[in-house]
Length: 134
Image (cartoon, rainbow, N blue to C red; front, side, top):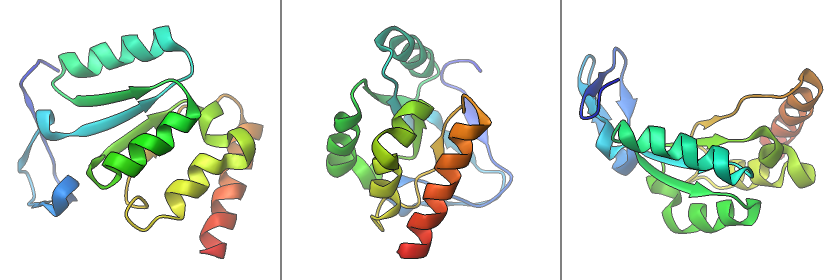
């Protein structure tokens, strides 16, 4: 993707601020806010640089507790969370519980590459439990 280009969607999409887009309307990438969470500072910086070069707004955090701080201050305005799986399932999946337990944050997609099926399985089980207890 070239810098400054728009993304064209084929479905209805709701962006931060509640703006609902119509079919095939272009999304201005400079308005998409991504929360990038990675304990590896070097990797986090590389991914952040790539996303910024594609015109996305990126907030990067390296420590799990910073995730909560950012979500408390910017939460409803974050369009997507890209997170290292270790942060998602660390300490009994408290980050997932926090997101799923807050009605203003539940709409935010959380994207992560899983390391192993056992870690993914634990995260899915915990997420299901969170939803059932909500």
